[in-house]
Image (cartoon, rainbow, N blue to C red; front, top):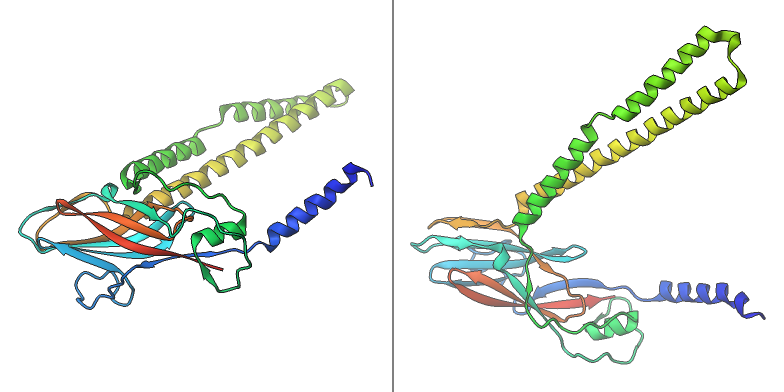
Length: 282
């Protein structure tokens, strides 16, 4: 068999091997959950979470879900102290933790089985990056909101902008149509062909320009919606007065090749650590 004839077979075998590779659900839970028996600081009384307090300021953190690049935590502060407390979502950070830094031999993972990150990576033939040397900072929502809103405004402005070139092409096309009517039978084949080409170019350009404006309008709506969601749900920087409370989402970078996550959280003038377990279930 010629060598080049094996290539489709090899590609098919590679595709089948990829299709048979296991997939995993990522989960995050507190290392030592507090389910909110104190009742005051729990983001959700029925959901496992971690909570801590210092000098009259309490903090509760619960895993909410994950996005392609972020782990989302619901955070709630209560200020029962006599002082104003600064809230800074950008001051959060995380440190990925591992059971081992060595990849084991690949083995079959049963459906529903939870395995360490190294076993999951080995079964997926995936990369095994080194642990970061410094804590991973949380998403700062303010510049992201501003950037999304600015992008939405620019895309919306482009979608509303008059297309003078398109209008000019349509006007010329209409004018040549009118001229052809007045010439009637005196129009030559070359003139008719030129008129048809100009007509086709004008309407093709108009269709493409309309599609582009529609795409820009969709982009503007999507970016404005993303900015609005962050504005409404993310934990925002500010001052928490005595007796007040605040709740919002904090976004920490995903690091799937980890078995745990140490969250560094600001609490008044201190920084506290909260440990979570990261699971990989087939």
